[in-house]
Image 1 (tube, helix red, strand yellow):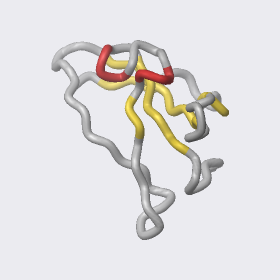
Image 2 (cartoon, rainbow, N blue to C red):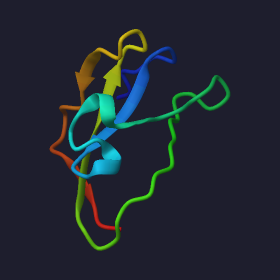
Image 3 (cartoon, rainbow, N blue to C red):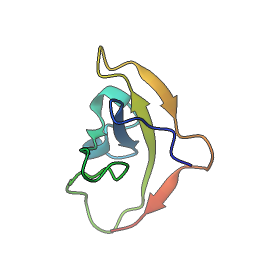
Image 4 (cartoon, one colour):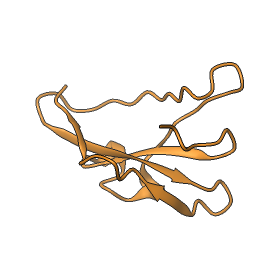
Length: 80
């Protein structure tokens, strides 16, 4: 179930530098708009051949305060 609101900021934070090395303020902000909400997107480059772990984080835009880490599942993972 999606618990985000259009005014929230959704970030991807993960195990590699381009995903912030688990630091929410250094992750990748996803984007949405009224036409596609609740679909959020971003593009990044990741190194090939290594496993990448990540989670979604909801942050407030004011001061980028972490509101909620994704907690329903373990870390997500992919290998590009």
